[in-house]
Image 1 (cartoon, rainbow, N blue to C red):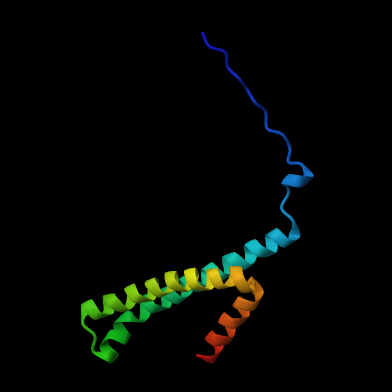
Image 2: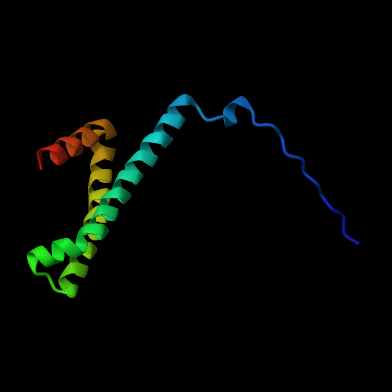
Length: 102
């Protein structure tokens, strides 16, 4: 017969607790991710109207959604690299200004 090793859970120490800054960062990430999902949700609801208005075929409408998702991935890679180089706040400010201007 083998022995059973039981390990009891220890209460989190001060070093294991999430700081206020960590909670703010999490909240900002959740809001950003939610807005990205909202953008895709609006596109999926409006795709029929957009396709009818622009006389798009099913393949063209599918390409519109595909390129939207590919643009999100490319933007994440490009602006993620830029934010590593120039700082996250500066690049986030650039993206907000570009989105507001467009």
